[in-house]
Length: 211
Ligand SMILES: [Zn+2]
Ligand SMILES: [Zn+2]
Image: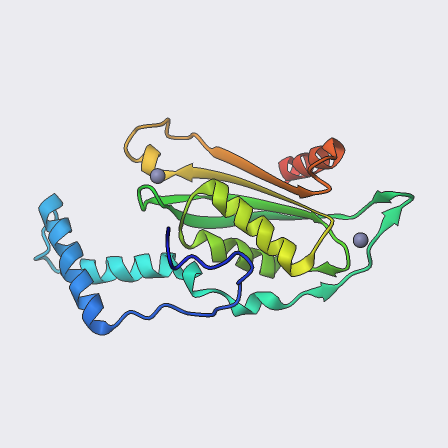
């Protein structure tokens, strides 16, 4: 278990990471040794600072562990019904994301579509983008990423239903030729009213395809 993994509801930044300068130096040394052993010439103008740049890029790509306290703003909404049917699916997407697969620490990237049936609160599209990136910028797997986005959105606005569809290309398989170059992995999470209403699921998927 990763001790740094925050509880799903904790979207605010409770403990941003802190890495001491001496640690950075040690990490640069280690990654430099690995690059060199694998074939990189570290003694050129272009590569001398590569270990440092690589670690900085990796640190930025995992900034989701630092949390995001700008996520907490939500807006009031009027719950809408027609007869006994809830109306007003909100669909946002495509939201692009880049994540690191926890099995290989290599990127998987693609787009997210998030749909929800609002109750008394809604969230702006820029916040949804933040929410997707909060969980994408970590070492994760696609299935968990979808679940975490759905859980956090549920905590933030308590809608009647949530749908999260992720479509991604996984470099850990594609770069090594394990899988066909253009294959995409699709995962979908259904929550609340989507779970037992096929018509809502169809509506969501139809809207996603029209994007
Ligand atoms: Zn992988
Ligand atoms: Zn409602």
